Length: 103
Length: 88
Image (cartoon, rainbow over the protein chains, first blue to last red):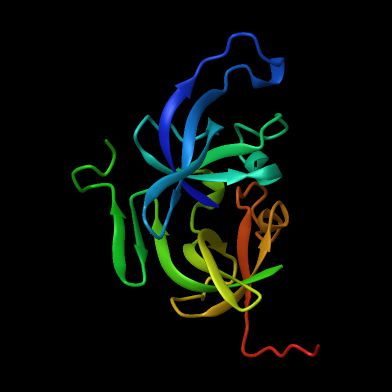
């Protein structure tokens, strides 16, 4: 799975019928070594109520359809967790509770 | 399958139902003996800890490892590596 920052929202009224009612967010992957946002903007289906600025975990490929909201839907990337904190090599590299945890 | 070294943990209280009780670990991928990037993987063995040398299953098969019907995981730790040798 991938840690990402939610950087925006996507609104689409004219879309395939199976995607109706889905909340679409814009995410960008975070490199866990530098904790910097890298890589392309991706559209991800939100299944846990994430908001802009939050650090989340996304799943890609057909595994992203393994949730109640996206089962059987044309989805290849979904947000499945809102991150509280991450420890790497004994150091806390992200803590939601701290200031700037999510701008 | 691919190999990696467990390097940390991810904690999330608001998450998809299928991920309840599934440990989420940070894994440093190892390709051809070289350490590459960090990813997050679900720990199907439920015993992996920092420093363990593990192998993982990717994509949809990662969600097949678990008993619950809907587990949104695209990387799952499925075993530990004690030693390996390259024949060629």
